[in-house]
Amino acid sequence: MIQSLYAGSSGMEAQQLNLNTIANNLANANTNGFKRSKIEFQDLLYQKPRTAGADVGNGNVLPTGVELGHGSRVVATAKVFTQGQLKQTGGGMDIAVDGDGFIKVTRADGTDVYTRDGALKVDATGRLVTSDGLVVTGLPNMNKAQNINISPDGTMSWTTDGKAGNGNFPLVIFPNPAGLRSLGGNLYEETASSGAPQTGKPGIQGVGTLVQGFLESSNVNVVEEMVNMIQAQRAYEINSKAITTSDEMLGQIAQLKR
Image (tube, rainbow, N blue to C red; front, side):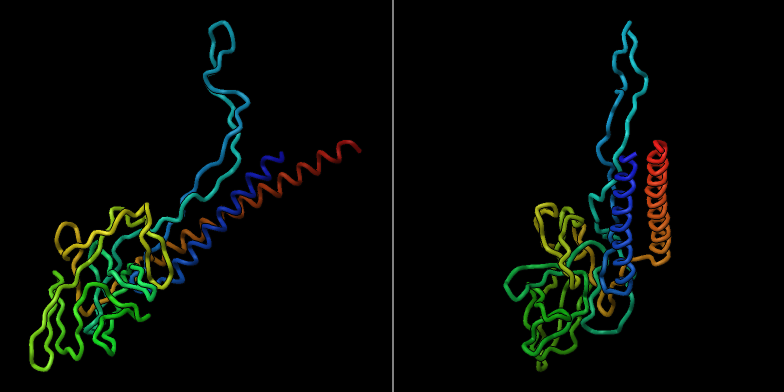
């Protein structure tokens, strides 16, 4: 009886984490380049009073056994890197990544991080930066640049005081993007699970292309997340009911002695 209490409580805790993940997805439904998370569950250890295949004598074996589970737990909240819808903004420095790839930026401490948020600006010194002022890595200085054009293959061109300038806009891909660490602020960090970053030219060898004047929307499907929320709520209620029922049964056992 006690085991059902533990199993029900573990299920409630798992569904609470599930609900937290769904709520975060919904909260970022309008965040540029946001990738939804999906929660993954795993059952806990089993108690086995009788093991399938055990010898019961006279050459006979048990065709089935008795296995009593101890509930569930959350083992991962994996990012889903499916493509978000591209929305036209008309902004000259709004860049959407269509396909696989990340924009590499540098933080104030000199470390490299990666983003899918292409809402970029040119700062006072001519550097291309994110909305938080992080500098896009590997790009030429475009101080006082005009008529900036970025092709799908990353080729850049502009004019400065009537003189033409050019450069390239690289993207970075990872062997396992789901292994990246989310830092908040639309940023990701390399981990041992993600593999080493590989810089490539847009449109070549699996690297996505660039679309100027567009931004990538979140890949959150609000209707799907609402359905997931209802399922999580129902599962939470069922586990709560299991605990209540177990408690009532224990109460009835306690009264048998009276």
